[in-house]
Image (cartoon, rainbow, N blue to C red; front, side):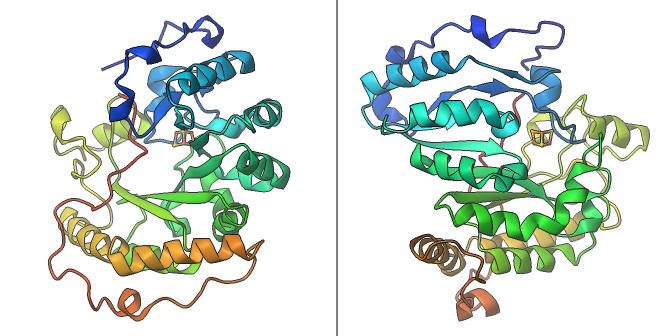
Length: 324
Ligand code: SF4
């Protein structure tokens, strides 16, 4: 496990990655890191805790040099900014994005939802090749968000804006990968239908669901340990995001498992996935999408045409994996 606590590292001292050693043909994206850390403290999040305690950024010229080196090997690359929460310092990105535009790169990035407050930044990001942003919404219902963000209960306070955030970002032609954690305290068995309804109402291009997972040394882990709710402590091979390693509340572990599998079948069915993606294309081509999304297709609504047996794992693998 990588753990940088006590060894803070200035990103200005980062060496140029040896991209030339990669067999480029085998990759569908290459990573560049412009920042590290996150000002928020979500109880389950390992990245800020293990990688750095303070938010830090790489000088813009260094980021551009890395991208230019990638372009020497791959003229029109797809880049993943491996940042925990990229757009925290918007002034930095307002400077970087115009320099990125014209370099003919497409890219993906993880951010919090506050980026939706800055239309100018979203437009600049789109011009600079931003294809998709991944955002951790965590819960479609307010109850599950209580106390998730430990400093200011920030995620709960932003919950009323969730639907507007997705519509606003996608109206700029940038896809949203909306991520949710199931099994939060406060989630009842109603959460599965609530999540399906949320996705149907907002139509994010991609959606990701995982079980709440108490990664070691996170506040969540320590709390569950104190409460005697860890069921597989130390069995790290089970910490996949798709195994239940604690006693959920108020659901039972079996109710959580069943609900998760049934929701997986519905969310990732071909018909529902295609419907969401068609919606995105329509929103983008018709301009700002304050309008509601199209009515869902029948198969998506009724479950007809969907698999009769739930898959053991989600059909779409998560992109927001913890950095351990
Ligand atoms: S889950 Fe996201 S918003 Fe929360 S602390 Fe981690 S990186 Fe920051």
